Every structure is written in C-alpha cells, then in structure tokens.
Image (cartoon, rainbow, N blue to C red):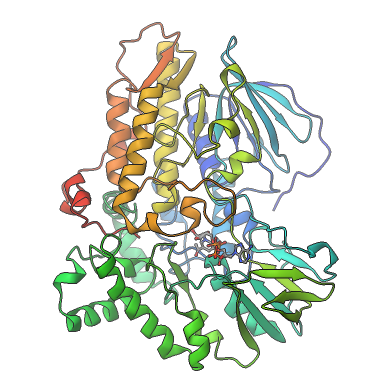
Length: 578
Ligand code: N01
C-alpha cells in the first residue's frame, strides 16, 4: 500500500474544490467532481485511503452491515466485479476494497497522503476558501468539502498517572499497522462498546490474562458471521439494483426483513418466539423484531429482558453475568454485534471489573487502579471510542464569514441545514454531517447520497454562474428544531451515548444524527433541490431562475409507498430503526 510520507514541496495551487479526508466519502466525492469536469485536491491524514478502515485495525474489526450492502452502488461494474468473502467483511478486506476503488478510478494522483488540514478560512470578497495543512500547503478553492468521518477523532481520556505507566497503551481507533502480539501478556481493555466487544474475544485468545474495565454494560447480538454462499452472491448480483432500491427505501438505508407489529400487541409466548427467531438471524436486524421497540419503554423492556436472559444463559458465573447485564434501554446506545463476546467471560483467565461507580482511578508504573485494587498489566487497550460527529471538525480551525469560527458556532451543539451546510460558512459542505441520517443509516449509502447531492449542487452553480451558496438562518433553525423534535420521538434520545455527545465530559448534550429515516431525509433533500435550492441563497447567479439540472441525485428518489417509512408511521411510532 503506498504511503506518501516522503518529502514533498508544499503546494500553493488553486482548485475548484478541496476535499478533506480520503475515506469512502472523500474518494467518491473526488471521483464525481472529476467526472463533472472539476478540479479537486484531497488531503488525507493517513498514509492511504479508507478512513475508518485505515485506522481501525484492531483484532476482530469488521462491518456490522452485510458486505454486499456495505459497499458503493454508483458503479455497476464495480459491484459486479468485487467479491466479498464473508457476510460481514473483516477490516482487511474492506481496506483492500477501498484500495481497489482508488486504483480502479485512478484516485491517488489527486490525493496528498500523510497530510492533515489544520486551517480553513473563507474570504468573503473572493468567495473562496484558503486551506492550510501541517505540511505547509496553502491552497485556495471555491468549495471546501469536509469528508471527515463521523467516528474519526479518538477519545483518549486523560487518566491520572497515564504518563507514569511504562507499558504500551493502544487505542482501537489508531491501531498499529503491524498488529500487536499479546501472546503471554497480561492485558487490560478499557471500555465495552463495539470496538471492545469485537476485539476482546480475540485478545483473550492470545493474552495470558485479560482484565476488562467496564463503565457501562452494553447489549450485543451475535453476528453469526459466515462465508458468503456463492449462489446467494450470484442471485444478488443478478439484480443488484433491486437490492439497492429496497435498501434505499428502508429507514436505515439497508435492507433486512422486519416486522412492524408492536411488541405489546403480541402475547408473551409470541414475543419469545419472535425474539428467538430474530436472535437466530443475528446482527442489527434483531431490532426489527417489532416496530415499537425504540419508541415504547414497555415494549423495550420486553426485548431487554430477553437479552438479559440470553446473557445469564451464556455466562456461567452468575455474578459476572449480572455485571454484564445492562440496565438501560435496549438499542439506546448503538447496538453491538459480536462473535463469542459473552462466552469469553467463561474463560478462567478473563476478569471483568465493574468501574461504573469509581471509573479508572489512576494508572501506575505497572498497571491500573480501579475500585481500590491495582491490576498489574503489560499492555492496555483503550477501546474508549470517539468524539463522535463533531470531534473531527474540532481538530481543524474553520473560520467562515466575519471571523466566525465553527467551534464557536457549535459551542452548544452542531447547527446545520440538512447536515450538509451551516450558516456563516458559505461554500462549505459536510458529508454525513450532524443533522443528517449519517450513523443511523448504512454509512456508504448515506455518503453516496450526500456526494451526489453536493456534486449536483456545485454543477448547478457552475451552470448559473453562482459564486457562493449558504443556507438561510430561518431554514437552518427550522431544520435543527425538526432534528431535535424527531429525536424526542425515539427512546434513543434518553440515554448517555455518543449519539448525544454524552460519552465525553463537557460536550454539549444534543442528539446529533437525523433519526427521521433515510428515505424521508432523501426526499426532503430532493424537494429542496427541485425547488431551486430552497432554504439556500445562491449569490452572484446570472440566471437565478434556471431550474436545476439533476445529474446524479436522480437515483435517490425513493417511493414513500411503504407504511413503515411514512411520516405518519413515524408519528405513530411504528418504524423499526437500527
Ligand atoms: O466506542 P463506544 P467504540 N473510562 O463509545 C468506555 C462504530 N463501530 O469505539 O458507555 C472508562 O461505543 C465507554 O463507557 P460508557 C459503532 O457505531 C462499529 O466501541 O461511555 N471507560 C464505552 O464502554 C460504535 O458504536 C463497529 O460508560 C470509558 C467504551 O469506552 C462506534 O463505532 C466496530 C471512558 C467506548 O465505546 C464507537 O464504538 C467498532 C473512560 N474515561 C466501532 N471513556 C462495527 O461493528 C469511554 N469509556 C462496524
């Protein structure tokens, strides 16, 4: 894999667009802009493409949406030629896929790797952005497109005494590229979210002893991962567009079988059967067992009881099992998907330490102190997650019109129009930004829809000679209010999760992604475009009345013909969301 950490002269060029990040969003953005005849420069902090999949190389990392759907749909040739080997692809294969895409579409020549954007400032007179990097680049572009990733800024808590600890400390989101050999070591893992749950069973296989420090117990459903059946793949590929269309019509942007019936209308025996059946299918679709699980607390209690019974059935030591049983809303935090997680605690060399009350007290030279006891550790893994959604914006000094910084504007929580743009920051686009479905949808689909919309918008601006685009304050305020209002309908807004920024002390508590459902969101974006970018001001356009020519967004028109995704169904709390 190429890394460009070589010396290179800083550049001072001008482009139509600067794209920050070469993950799935940045790569596809570059491809589409090039197809439309625009020039673009991509800056990427990593040494290669792939974003999340470049950084998160911890043992067991894999997608939790089926590989055949967790992939680009923009090129039929690409989706036909690529062969996924497992139901849920491992990180290595997803990264290989990202590299294949980069090669196939000749993307690398416009990407500068090992380069972090440090500053982006808007010049209102020139209507252009000046972007600076940590390698001395200083370039200008009409558009600045943030393809930063929703879960990219690692949360590395400043534990007392951390500097005294003499062993290695790893973060799952910044895993060493050569891997880590834990053989014969006493290992500690801090955290029990998705990254921990995927890595713990594999770390336990190598380590002499494994101590897991748990602040909040998490719900996890078995993945039942398996090799893909060639006949199944052939069938999907025979009519891939049909699968993609069905996926787009789902609230989550990916297709799985679900049931809209309310749990509370079923008998106790009926529910047990239904949960068993969905448990045997495994993964995130488990939440589709009933339509009201994320809306009615009483319904949620039934699924939470079922999950706790599963834990008690798997974990042999009743005290350990109780510690592993979450007492919060099922699926309120992002549901985890595992292979052998609870079983790992039946191994004699694995210890679970409940730190809910005291947290990690401190590090010492040789280990970690928690609950008043010292645990001697040769290596520590921080599976402590990310400053989600906005953390990667915070790492760049972004200054818009009149010296307004994005950090200041988002002090009390992110404010965007459609999760795509923000008042005061003309010509700045965010891909899967806060206020869009992003992490609540299948991310690759959410990315493609945003890229297509932004590319169409930029092409329209060229058609009409517009110099800048910016949302109006009234429309942004209305969107923020709508995002908050819809969030209140769901139980998801009720617990301390990274969705609301509550995983890190001091961050504002705001439900950041749009929970109204992917198709509803997509159609809203399309309506806005069809109406000539309603809610946006296009400045300097020679022909303001020219109707937008839709080039790429067309494929995202979703028929709202299913009950489950209509606004009425949402209001009636009958929308399975995972
Ligand atoms: O992070 P997390 P993650 N002291 O925030 C604990 C995606 N993903 O990297 O719950 C002690 O979920 C924290 O405790 P608490 C997926 O969307 C997907 O695991 O805040 N503990 C929690 O237990 C996922 O949701 C896959 O009380 C501390 C853990 O660390 C998202 O990424 C795989 C602490 C962090 O869990 C993030 O997952 C991996 C502290 N100071 C990730 N600070 C797939 O399967 C935090 N914790 C595709």
